[in-house]
Length: 532
Ligand code: G4P
Image 1 (cartoon, rainbow, N blue to C red):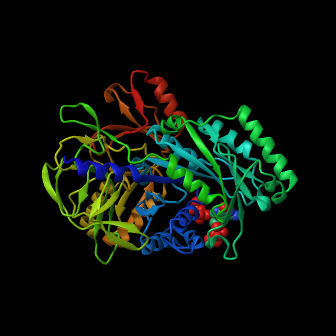
Image 2: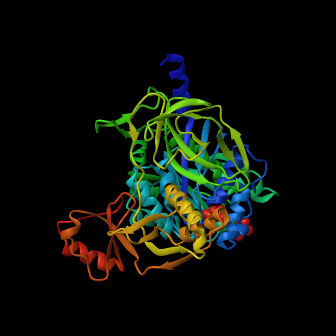
Image 3: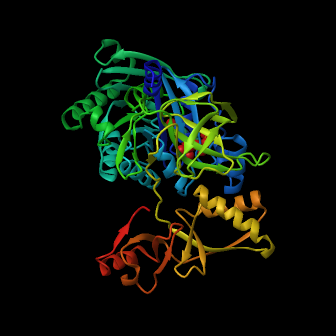
């Protein structure tokens, strides 16, 4: 590859910050995204992503709304510049239930921002998403949000992150005051204080920020003595008992840098974003398998264009009935209308009509670099996990499938709609909305998902896109496992059921986690796999 092109790719990949925000609903993910747009100059006043009140409507209204807004019904991505960096935010759905889309989206990220509500601490969904980051060794930055409200003491929150998530937490900055008295943050390494003032426009405009050394006499006249005493006391304590920060440990996923802010009032937000672009990794290399079974790390710069599909979304615009494949660019330079090898199909495809998204607007992409996400209009040739590339034959690692936790028997209410139903189900399974399981004798099939919301999505989309009403009878199982070992010698508990997945791999459904543990103890020569 010519040296100029290599330099261009190296520079562009080095600027990319491709990340996802992980949090429990209501912690402030949407607000933080808005503020990132505000501080990057993409919008002049915050509020673009939409009113949050509306997002709390019933599921189907919510989906309708999200679709009309054009972003985030399920995960998509936005791109914009922040200072010297090019930001790619992968949007993960903000609803209560989990879906595989969220997991898969995380595979396309190079880092994650974990937003924690200062009053609530580490909540259940945050914990699950954090686990996925840990499994994939994705570095995580922590933002303790809502510092303008009465919350828990910062030291408690740090301890909770460490205890509940099992990761070292290292405070990069420290809050001055909390609740109504939250007036600033101190950067621990430079001992520089940022003091904030509310603007008349509230959080819709950037907060005014004044920076001043912690040890300056002026500071004492600007903040209350109690606040000064408290913050110096905490800082001393952190020096003695806190974890040191090391960029390498962070990049390895062994320590999470912690920041304090209020996304609503913008206090601490710019300090956080500035640190984020400094610390977060640029486009990182991915692992792939070669045709002869070797594992290789694909060089971001030297390998010509390659990418993989991490998400499919059919019918984003019901008027056009189009379907979009979202690709993560892993190496080289992408150009519009490029003809690439589609490894699974063994043929060549032209990548025409590539686009990226900012809210409703689709922008055509002419070139893209490692770390970028592009949407390609997909006339059916892409499946999740597909690798495409300009020259090579390696395949990026298959995307993980998670153990389903809800199961149902399903059929169309009108038997005349069987064909449309089957077509819809094939599409939904290809997109990963649900998994389809079959009995070992192939006579029966079931649907399975990680969270119940996926069944609502299934029902809604079959109705809207395929005009099929379905009847769904939930089955009494609440956990499952892929089974490695001989199915014939496996002795399941009497209330369990052995079925197979789309790839004919055995999967066992259990009524309770207890029954699953019992089965594992009873079958020591079989292995239970957490992920398929
Ligand atoms: P999510 O995407 O993680 O679900 O959270 P979202 O940003 O929608 O925030 C949830 C609620 O918390 C919103 O209030 C939002 O305004 C509020 N919020 C977010 N960050 C902060 C913060 O730093 N401080 C305070 N005080 N509140 C914050 P809402 O009343 O549900 O919605 P809205 O009427 O404000 O739109």
